Length: 68
Image (cartoon, rainbow, N blue to C red; front, side):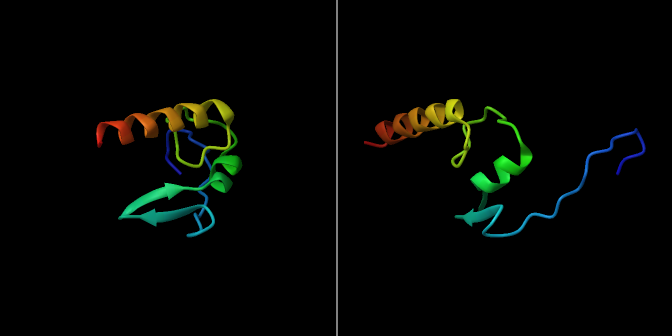
């Protein structure tokens, strides 16, 4: 905990429950997102919050189209 009054709790992440590695990158699971309790609006792959899933699907479609 920092000395500036930050009271954020440090939570230990559990591999294959909160995250997994995909080509060396950490991918957060839906379980992690639900425990966090809010959407960060970054289009996470396993976001359980509907609006972000829609944006993520569109982003993936755009990326796939670029590689054709």
